[in-house]
Amino acid sequence: MAAKVFESIRKFGLALAVVGGVVNSALYNVDAGHRAVIFDRFRGVQHFVVGEGTHFLIPWVQKPIIFDCRSQPRNIPVITGSKDLQNVNITLRILFRPVASQLPRIYTSIGEDYDERVLPSITTEILKSVVARFDAGELITYLPSGNSVLLQLPQ
Image 1 (cartoon, rainbow, N blue to C red):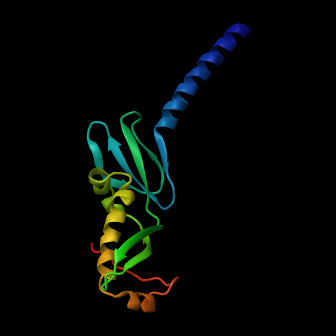
Image 2: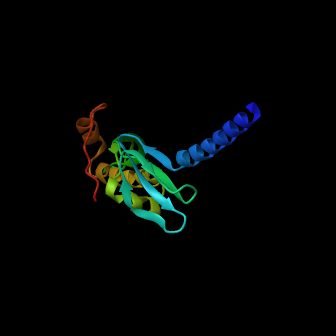
Image 3: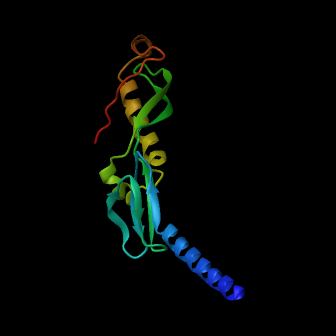
């Protein structure tokens, strides 16, 4: 009698563990300030963005790719030339964040490390074009250490 009870408990426990594992693999969380893009093995990257919260997906078929959509700082050092051909060593600190509605396009065209690929080249070119407008004396006068300058990147 006791053996039958333990056998039924073992079967129930095993079934519960399997069901729990499947349910656990079908859930994912998107934290506050983050967004997710769903990659489907059959259909590719889905064209919608998933917001914050707990969501369902098809286990082993779909995979969430989670992006941080909060403003993040980044320092980019650049050595460039001024208008009078003096070398200028300047560091630009920028705050950036992706546009949440464009995350599927960002993921398919650039990848998850979009900030490592895009920001250094864009900010370096813009900073070089801005610094080249001034000579070294004007840069020292107008940009003392510790002050910040707002540059609007083109869309």
